[in-house]
Every structure is written in structure tokens, then in C-alpha cells.
Amino acid sequence: MPFDPSPRDWLEPTTKFAAGRWSYSAKPKALNTLGFPNPRDWSPAEPDWKLPDNWKEIILQGLKERMGRFRSLRIFMDSCVRCGACADKCHYFIGTGDPKNMPVLRAELLRSVYRGEMTLAGRILGRLVGARRLTPEVLREWFYYFYQCTECRRCSVFCPFGIDQAEITMLGRELLNLLGLNINWVMDPAAKCFMTGNHLGITPHALKDNLEFFVDTIEEITGIRIDPPINKKGAQVLFVAPSGDLLAEPGIFTLMGYLLVLHQSGLDYTWSTYASEGGNFGMFASHDLMKSLNAKIYAEARRLGVKWILGGECGHMWRVAHQYMETMNGPADFLEEPVSPITGTRFENARTTRMVHIAEFTADLIHHGRLRLAPERNDGYRVTYHDSCNPARSMGLLEEPRYILGKTCRHFHEMPAETIREKTFCCGCGAGLGSEECMDLRMRGGIPRAEAVRAVREKHGVNLLSCICAIDRAVLPTLMERWVPDVGVAGLHELVGNALVLDGEKPRTTNLRGEPLGGGVA
Amino acid sequence: MPTITLSGEPFEVDEDGFLKDPARWNESVAKGLASEEGISELTEDHWKVIRYLNNYYKQFGSAPMVRKLSKETGFDLKTIYKLFPTGPAKGACKLAGLPKPTGCI
Image 1: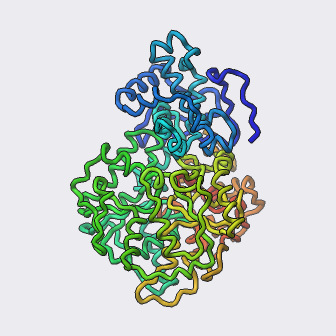
Image 2: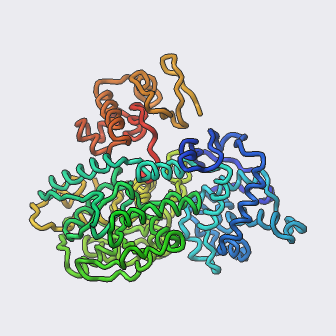
């Protein structure tokens, strides 16, 4: 990527907001709903950000408090040796060529202020030790670059110290939020989650209406009418999906796949209109917001009296569940250790969260011969698999999706080894960066993933990119259209739903998209 | 927040021109916003989509699935893109007065 680094010292920034690489500010309505500070109309592109007079004091006090609260932050502020192992691992650095998108330097944006404002050596020696003071220009730089990180954690895989760059971005954004410096694509969904139950603002009656639409569609395709329960007290299991699957293509086909598996398995489960969101955009704004959004799911599990929770193909839902839930809202000891009532399998890995991933549930059903599959129905697809960042790196969900793909598709090809599993490349749009206005950043950040898809398209004729994240399903189609045309995108359970043979179903002529079987990507 | 004037009346809109307050929508808003969405004249087909979206939003408080929009109006996605070049979630929703969708979509 051509890039002309500023001749000035990086410690003295003059951040130019490039077109297509920053997101619109959060609207006052969302901040008022969430009780976040400084709701106002403002734009990152304008010179006046309408900050409170004591903005500097607020940030430094906020940083001090968090240094006391998060041991991880203290370690991350002091332990980096600038070895550079992370530098070229970031999809945004690869795609933009901007040095400040090297994870090491993005973290230094915060570390330099910590040193300059909070350490004796930094205050005395200043730039000699990479220290600087907090100025309005530094604040602009923070906003620009902390909203150019998708918290995907690929860099952390390569860090010899295990520094979690996502946590640095989370803390950076949390500090910015103290001044009302946030983006609408994060705060609006988070606010809607409290007002309607989910990020997309799907109201309870719209959710019911959508489920009925899926039930009708499934009946047209299979001849079987299923009856998904909603808000059913006393059900054994609460099922929570990302709300994107309830509304947008191709997620809705994934959702039909969930419905088919849950119906055929005979699981006693329920949807909820209150906990109708697996995702957690709070993670992209502050720890407190992440905690309260996560708590909603558990509050609903308690209210409905279920035994455990089953989660859909969501991305960061699983980072929150596996790495924060226990200390934030746990232990969930009012629930039971998850056991599949169909196979008797005890999901020991979900002992503390009591939340099982649907890929685990389905893989277990297949392993025990409880699902009859006709993988030839997916013969039109030559499939590859994008390890969605958070299920892969935050919960180690690497084998189950591959096991399921192996049983439901007859043409499966892996992308190059350095781009899958724990080294998977981000879609380029996570952590609230999936907006239209951010398109240049999205298309650049997605280049490494797109190149890996291109490799298997050229070598094996791959025409379908499967994934297990709703952001992936929302943004990868645009990325494919831009860089690797003719490759479609599907959730794992869409392929399961195509292959699954329901008891008593009529001979199928179409897949879940209504396209002729075996036809490939339309 | 930017303001636009349609038929002599000021309306607050977001960065992409979506109405801030969906309750203020009326047909003159749709007519006024059409040209910036690359539509020279609103035909009866346009109105069918716009009215369906607006009514759905009034009833359900959110946008419908595109598949549902297709099924109810009888227009496939290709036709909807022909009518609204920026697509159902942008052009069509904007003209129907719906807020811009955000989140995992």
C-alpha cells in the first residue's frame, strides 16, 4: 500500500481524518438512553468537539482509576518491549500501510500518555523515554486509531508477552467515552438493545412476525410446519441468536438452519423477546455497558427458569461469555451444568457460563448419529471456512465447525494455514466498524481475508465462504463483491439446514434460499 | 445536525440524509428526497414500496426483512434496485422515512 508517513515525530501528531476511514458520532438520543456523558450533536470532522472544559482531568482521572481496577491494563502499559512481532499481523496495517495501525504503535498512543502524565521518568525525561503529555491533538489521534481496530486479537497471538491489543482498544474507547467521543454504529445498537431487546431494534411483535415468515418459508421448502416457542417459561433451554440473523440476508438462512436443527433434535427450548440479542456492542464502548448487556441474557434465563443457555452463530458474544461473564455477572449457579438431553453429553467447557455454542450442540448431535444428513444437497457449493475471530481466538472453537462442514458438504477446502484457525484474518468490520461511511477502511482491512479466499477460489473453485458470526454475514458479501466476485457467504447452520433430513419431509427441490438444489451460488 | 428544506419546511436529517424524526414523514418528504437517491420521478411502483415500508415501520417499529418486502410488494430484489438505485435499506427506507439501520447488518 502506498503511504507517505508524516516527516514529523510520531509523538506530535497532526491527524488527518481520511475519507472513508472514520465513523459518524453517536447521536444524543442513544447516549441519553444509555446514560453516557456529554450527549450532543458533533462531528469528528469538525474542529470543535464540544468537550467539557475539564476534559483532560476527566481522562487522566479515568486512566488512573482503570489502572487501579484492571491489573491487565497495568501490565500492558509497562510490559511491551517494542519487538515488533505484532506489527505486520494487523489487517488494518496491511490494508492501509499507516504505521499507527501497527498494534504496537496503536498501543503506544496510550502508553506514551501514561508515561508522560503518570510516571516520574516520563515526566522528567519526556520524549527520551517515549513520553508525551495529553493534548487535544493526542485526543484526536486516539479517536481516529482506536476506531481503526476491530478488537480481533490476531496480533495478540504473535505477541511474546501475550499483550491483548483488544483490551487496550477497549480501554482507549472507554476513556474516550468519558468525554462523549463515540460512534453511532456502536452506541445506537447498544441503546436499542435496552429499548427493544436487540441491536437492530426488532420489537417483540416484529420478532414474532419474522419467525412466522421463516416458518412459512420452511414449510414451503420441506412440507413441515414447525412451531418455535417464544418466551416459554419452564423450557429447558433458552436460545439466543445474534439479531442480525432475524433480519438480514444471508443471516436469515442461518437462522432457518437453527430452527430446523432445534426442531429435529426435539430440544425443549425457547426464544426470548427480551434477550433477543447474542451480540454485545457494550464491549466496544465500556466494561460497564458490556456487563449490563450480558446480564440481560442471564436475567432472562432466570426469569424463564431454564436449565442452561444455547447461543447462536454470533462473534463477540462468545468473547464476552468466555472471558468476562464469570467475573462480571457470574457465577451462573442458578442454572445447571449444560447436558444435552438428547445425547447425554455434558458440556464441561461451559461449566461456568452455562452457555453452549450451537456448533457444539449440533456437532454432538451429528457425532451421536441423531441427525440424518444429505450432504449432496450442498453439492453446488465448493466451501471454505472463515474462522470468525472471537469464537476462534476467544473460545477455541476450531474443530466443531469443521466437523460439521465435513458432514454436511462434500466439497470443502481450507484457506492457507496462516489465515485460519487462531491466525484467522478479521473480516475488517468488527467492533462497530461495519458502517457505510467506513467503507474505505473496511475494504482495505478485508484485503488479507479476501486474498486468502481468492487463493482457494483459484486453486479449488471455491464459491462459498462459510462463517459463524453475524457481522461476518453482514459485511463479507460486500468484501467478496469488491475483491473476489462470485464467492457467496453463508453461516454454518445454513449448510446444516440444507443437508438436514427432517422426519416426514417432502423431497426438496430448493435450498433454504429458494434456489434449485445443486445450483451453486446465484 | 444538518437541516434540509422540503416544500418550504425544515427537516432535521442525519449525515446520510435520513429523517431524524420518522413521525414527521409525509409524501412530500419522499418526493423531496427522491432526486438525491438518483430517482427522477416517483412512479406507482415506487409508492408501493414506500407505503409498505412506512406502514410496516408504523406497525412494527423497525424495518421489514428485504425478503418480506419482496414478497408483499411482488418486486424481486433486482426490481427494487432498479426502482431505488441505492438499495432497499438505504434509498427505499430513507424515502419511506425510516431511520438508518445500524448493527450487524
